[in-house]
Amino acid sequence: MNAIPSTTVANLRDLGGTPLPGGRSVRSGLLFRSGQLDRMDAASDPAVAALGIRTVVDFRTRQEREARPDRVPEDGRLLLADVLADLVASGRMPAAARLRQLLADPAVAEQELGGGRGPEMFGAVYRAFVTTNSARASYRAFLNEVADPDFGPLLFHCTAGKDRTGWAATIVLTLLGATPETVEAEYMSVNAAVREAFAPLVEGYTVQGGQPETALAIIGVLPDYLGAALDEVDARYGSMEKYVREGLGVTAEALARIRERLVVPA
Image 1 (cartoon, rainbow, N blue to C red):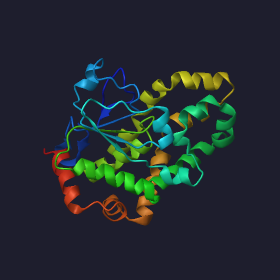
Image 2: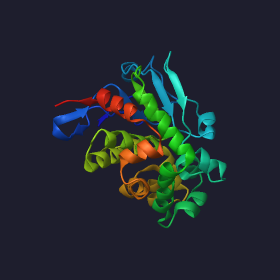
Image 3: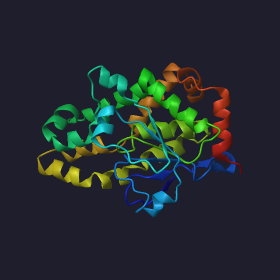
Image 4: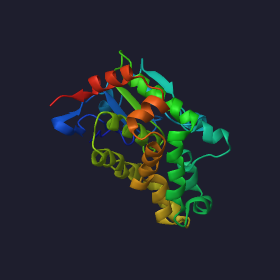
């Protein structure tokens, strides 16, 4: 659960070092998470250059990618995995994909998410991470990439690096055996970095009359958000293992490779 002090990538973290039961831990230097990479610059950012990223998995929508394209490291590979494609195609653009637009328009944000409606709407999006075809295909592609025999340092991200990215991290850590408390701690740990990255927009939001608690619901994460997705997994599959095997279609062999490569023995 290590934050990396990058100057060009917001909310950059190494999943390595996360404790696992029995004195084990997640191997460092292989799996990273972050916000969008439109400002990534390995040439001027030693922290990024040192990671040696070979693969980037982008969970954003087409609209998000076109507005702020990724800057992938030289010789890096980019995998597009649009988690929210089905929701967008149905005419619903989730708040998770409209963070900047909502913060720029308090009237719309308050109408959609004010009065305590934020957690309910984000909970629905998190349940869609489990149920929609586009989300299942995206997280299957992500896990298969991690399981690839040539898997090197991989970075996965969305816009803020908190919702779609947070669910991906939850899947991996749970598969590796992390306790629910550890998984939630990693999920919640991004709040400080996200609030720092979006601070100017939040300030402008409140100056225009928006409610601070609505802004925090937009840019932050709450245990209830994650709980909505975990409850959906339990209701439909009974366990994360069955969700990944049956819901995502990831093979037992792929899961074994993920565990072998990412777990440091006691």
